[in-house]
Image (tube, rainbow, N blue to C red; front, side, top):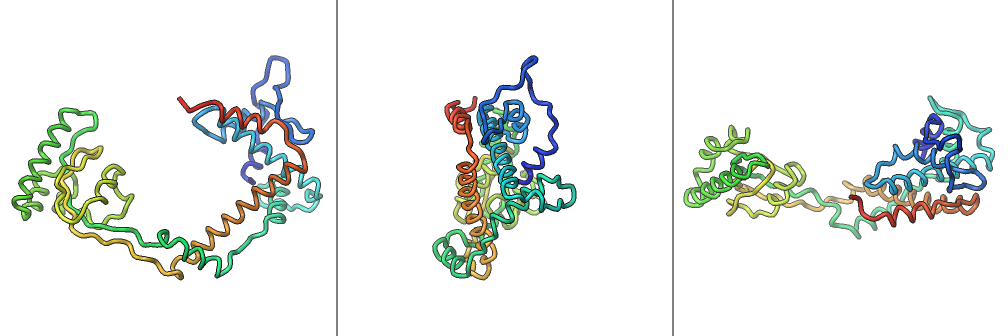
Length: 286
């Protein structure tokens, strides 16, 4: 919210205008209009697949900013602020307001332990495996090259099925990956450390030689899983700080949403629901 306030304070008035007329306005906070020119300027900070979604996000940000400004004024906080660094007075007032209204809510030890016990699957060390591979490279758009690479990979799998001890030798002679200097050894891997399409297939394999080539954007891979090391449960002490941060953030977000709804009721907002409805009705992005 403070970042949004900073943009508002420092933006220049360079939005679209109709010829000789003020920009149209359908959005109001109390008696303060937020015109289409302001929304258009704000949209650059809210990229979305469709313009209607970007417009709705920009409108929400401007409404929140104006609600906060009005609340600062209502409580007389603008006379109490001391800007920090490059802060403008308005930014400092909003920061003071948020610090006053949304006090930190540190979860208790019991809160953290209860969450730990209710979500054991979230607190495990990652699965790992050690694998070797032989890459038969082919560009993604080279149809004939990829067919040839797949055929070669299938031939190598047949050869290795009959004589597994040849893997290191074949990797050094036939692989197009730099790992060939280590006999195709990829070392210990966790999920997400390799190309996504290769990663998804790799972590479904049992130990041993894969009976089929694995395709990736780089070509086809002959893979042998050397060893699996499934993740193990982490102790509560290992993850307590992580749980506390997560729970505190969840509480703060809930309180923020409730507080903003209260501010909308107090100061009055018109036009935002219609803008958000237009974003919903606009249909999927092209």
